[in-house]
Length: 326
Image (cartoon, rainbow, N blue to C red; front, side):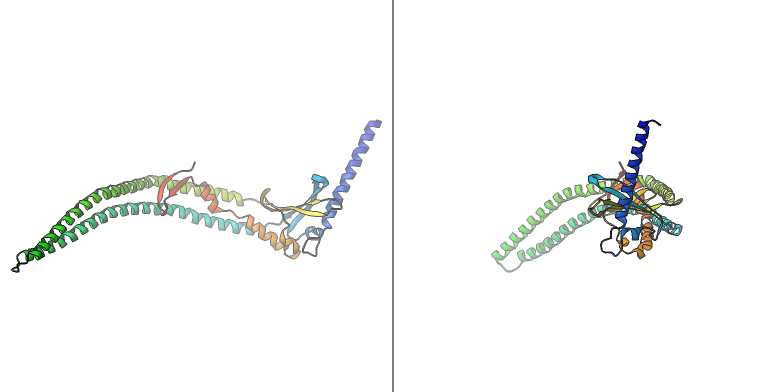
């Protein structure tokens, strides 16, 4: 080995030793730092923590002369918890899929009822006009009889007879006006009611046309989500808690982040130390509860996302139209 190679090798060894010292001192600094609101240090809580199958400390350079220290806890997972979560998810999926299938029947029933209501409104409007006209005709008929009695009365009272004739003429005029107004209203209202009936009939026909596609989509979506669910719960699972610290000599230690990973996918994070670390005796239970929460499979959300048909609704809850999601 020539002089240059020897010098280069020596320099690399010195750098390696220096980095090792930095690594050890930064990790040691974190381990010896006290948790806030606790009687423990980070090292006392995290080294050999209950609920961790294994733990690891690592470091890397950070900005402003700081060192990023990372603690990793590989937690213990329970197959019993996984299977229980799977069964709950399957039950939820069955419920959601059944509700989706039943939803079509309810939408079709609502469309049929909407058409029936539109037809009933037309009939009620016509009946209301007829009733008003009949009431006016009856009143006119009664008064005509009374006016005739006055006209044929042996009492010769011209003023009385003239008032009766004037009132009868007024009632006949009002009756004619009522007939004209009701007929005018009938033309407008019938056009509106017929339009409502046509729209309701169109919606019913559209909903009927969607039946086969809708029910097929409900079945296919359930099969797809079932496959995703089984894949989610299959095999073994790796659940990790990673806590990072920023350490700087003579300037203390700060918690940088706390992150949870399920099968190497981040499932939760925050900028604070997990509260249960302040109570080491509860850590095992807390880790198990966190795994139980994060291993869940949201069947409802997944089914809703995968279902390819989207229906829009009116303000009163009636379906206005259905279409394939874009």
